[in-house]
Amino acid sequence: MKNKQSAENYNYYSFFIKYSLMENYGFTAGFVSRIFEKFIPSVPDVNTFEFYLKKELERGNISNMRFNLTKLLSEPSTTARIKNDLNHAISALTSKIVTFGFDHKFHTKFKKLNIDSNCYKILLYQSSLLSEEGKVTNKEFETNLNEVCLTIYKLRENKNIIGTSLHLTIVMKNLLHYVERIKLLLDLKSDINSEKKWAYLIADYFEHEKSKNSLSKFFVSHTDLLALEIVEHTAQKGEKYVANDHKEYILFFKKGLLGGFIIAIFAFFKILLDTEISSAIPRAFLYSINYSICFIVVFLLGGIIATKQPAMTASTIAKHIDKDDDLQVDSLQAIILLVRKIARSQFISLIGNFIMALLVSCILAFLLTLLNDINPINTMKSKKLIYQVFPFSGGAFFYAAIAGIFLSLSGFISGYFDNKVKAINLASRITHNKTMSRNFSELNRKKIAYIVDKNLGVYAGNISLGFFLGSAFLISYILPINIDIRHIAFSSANVGFAILNHTFAFSTIILALLSVLFIGFINFIVSFSLTLYLVLKSRGVKINGLGQLLKLSVKDILSNPLDYLMYRKDK
Image (cartoon, rainbow, N blue to C red; front, side):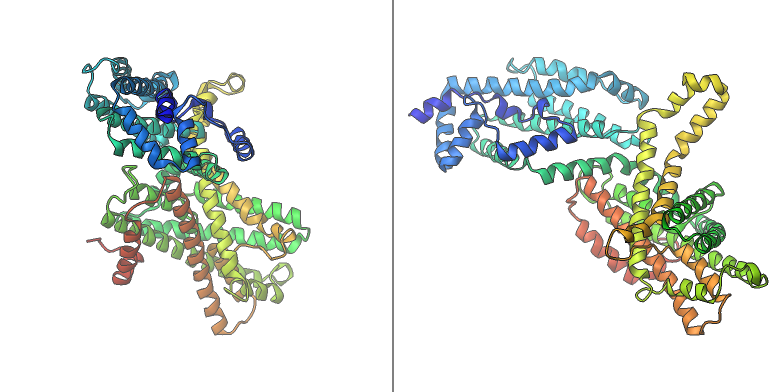
């Protein structure tokens, strides 16, 4: 009877509400707080239901706890008090949602996207009627909560227009958690004596307590949110690198040829730098500048570097896998058709890079052979350039994978800056900046703002990739293993320069050319798969049906291999 009496006087409010605004730390404060909790765990207030649950769990009295709860709920006075705490918790969670809905920054975003936010006003009104029986039904309340969720989903869908931030991403995630919690509480309110519903809430409490101070989960959730902040932008960019018909397929080949032409020229500049500069740090800096300028020139002239796109196209696939944000694979056949389009688009771009980089480097090498006195490519250099592309003896397998990681990372950097431009409304800031207004006319400020708005992410991605590729070898001075990169387009050019400056066996040349294609395959697979994994993970993913999608994809590749290489109308 003593247990029953003490349990009767517990406060259930904090148990029902679950979430506290006081727990919304920044990353550093949250991390430090969790370390402190590991050594000195917090204890619920002694007058709360959570304290009672913890004590009963420590004693191993789970069945006794449920028995006491059942007895308590049979008493009308106790049930009325619990219902009061339940209504109070629903009102509190509702007020958190409404606060964000009425926030002027949220309101501005709603207006910009023409999103009807009237549901927040209705929610405020409905919450004021909770304590009055029959004034508002659970169904009406849940219908309006679904409208609230819809406004949040629309904000997510239009991140490429309004941008986002890590804080905004966390806020939207929390709002959806509040909605789900309210629905659970409304369900309990409809049948307050249900043992099954109480058992679910109690089990949920124990699960939450077990993981809420986990350092690893806290770190992973924040990195996932950071990835989620930018994937919509990489997905939007990725859609431009998918050929949807035969005309676009041929256009991708032509753009690949242009990209290969430019790369061959900059590959020659890199050979010159390698010949003239021996000091590691200056060489790394100049390599990086050479790569960066090359990638930017290719972009400005409308060319394509095939292996730079997988990071973008993987985000596009992830977006189509879970279009409805419901953690379900939406349309298996549609996704397989998209994978086909991406594979053949990348293949034909890659072939364009390979052919033109090889051809132009051969022409340049031939012209250099006529100028023996200034030709930087001697016999030793030619052998080195050929040796570097071999998968195992030259380390190309490992080095191509490293390049794939950098290609993926540069895609995320590009998406991050694209998002940041939108999130902080940088174009408007530039247009109305007082300092710039003293030096530039309004027309010129608008031009600058437009260029920054459209291209900052591209420049950031290209420059970062240039520095990754150009400086990677410096890591060898720190680690006990050699670190370098191999990229298909530059490797193609290097082979072209080598075979025109030294006589190699025909079998060696064929092996080198096949090795270059292998490098391209590794660049693509590593960049694509790493990005796809991170993007799916960032979307919350333990997606049901993903295994089935992989099986069907493999089966389709084996059944229709040419559809992944050449354009044929998909059936």
